[in-house]
Length: 337
Image (cartoon, rainbow, N blue to C red; front, side, top):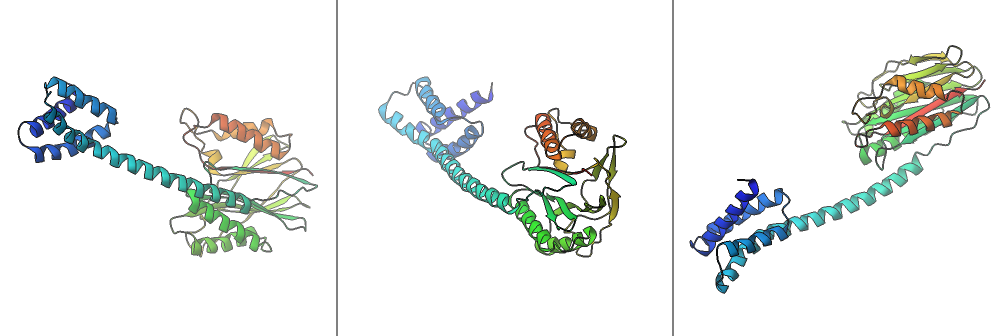
């Protein structure tokens, strides 16, 4: 006997108790349990009506008063469907309101986090940042100090949704405000204090912060628990990994950040990304290999960095598992000499 047969027998038992055994109260209570069961298996109201009609025929109930009385049972069962439908409509209304709020938040974030990419004589820059949903927890920022120095940051909020977007907007404003403070380790210390004091205690931010000297090609950098950067060396056609010690922003206001220096020679590139790139899930549910990213960059190394990041993004989109997306940001500096 199937589960559906059991439900049919249960409904028949309810009708018997209500119509013939003078157990109306018990039958009504059984209606409530029965309703819960059929709703859980996605039974439609039409199927319940059909079951009721079939049982009237099977039980040879032809008396008008009994048929009329049996409708009390049907009504009691279908009341639960009415509640479910109203709950469903209420949920849809809330989702619609939530979607509108997300649209507003997305528009505001796009405006507030928009970062112009400067055009410079000896340096080419490419950047792309794509949210997994309507709002993003990723961010990149560029500050041209107009004295042959360029500050930049790539960050990722450990969290999602509107709270993450708000936190990232706050980091941008803090970074812009302290523009005169161009030392990467000192900048991260100040940003860390802002995050620790103003962001939810369960939300943290990783960040790679760099200062590039256009005259010498030197790059000073610090990291707050962010993904290591990569440098493509044109002379050797090889990649090297760069990183610096530092805890994520927002854990403790006394955190200090290591600062290191590296030099980009002509046609060398710095690549910084968020974990939406390095921990991307492929269609077969495996993680992407970093060598795949290196191969994509190598294939397009002679192109402008903006073309490179676009190519990598489009390649990753084709590889990505549709239901396991994350915010994705990729940032490239290329020393053109």
